[in-house]
Image (cartoon, rainbow, N blue to C red; front, side):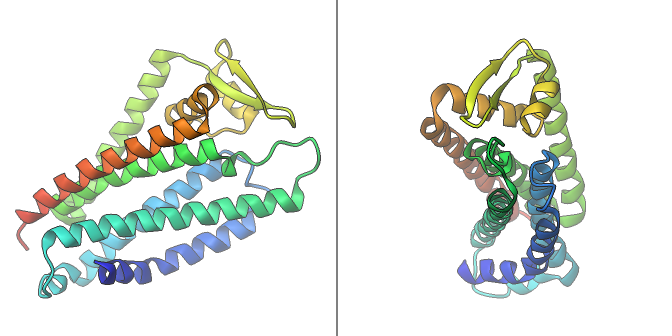
Length: 248
């Protein structure tokens, strides 16, 4: 399995190189922007999609299955590659944020929210959800049809999150001032609060940030990582079952 992950990592290095260059160029002014959160998430997803596209384009599946490896091992290796790519992307984004914070922040300004633990946990949960939605579709239908169905599943999840967010109508939790004072903003519009705090907009981010404020970071981390692990485990089992019945 490690050899398969190493193969994926070599394929994904150009994606990571582009990410490093982009974050270095943008870190002078964009790390504080909420859009940076989504840019890093999109790059991690692009890396995952790029691996499946390269396999499809070069017919790697047939070559891999000529080797003494099981289909389950191929599936788990791809999940490992996707998670490793996500970890590297988050590390690159976090490093850019830290360097920007150290180099450019002045007294009285809040630390870049991109590198705060609660926002990083929201990133992890969102990326785990993307992996869990896409990879079963890929292993069931292949890159072409699986890509379309996976993209539709992800779009449906985004729409559902927006609908739930609008239905709940809850405010966000904001950190203000150099002391990081936690303020509940239940009576303020969510978009206004998120923008003022430098938080990325969205139900998952605001929910994780609010949970961290109410429950504390350690318990929130356990909940988020545990939920991510459960979602990925179920997804991997579904993908392995689908792949075992797929014909080439």
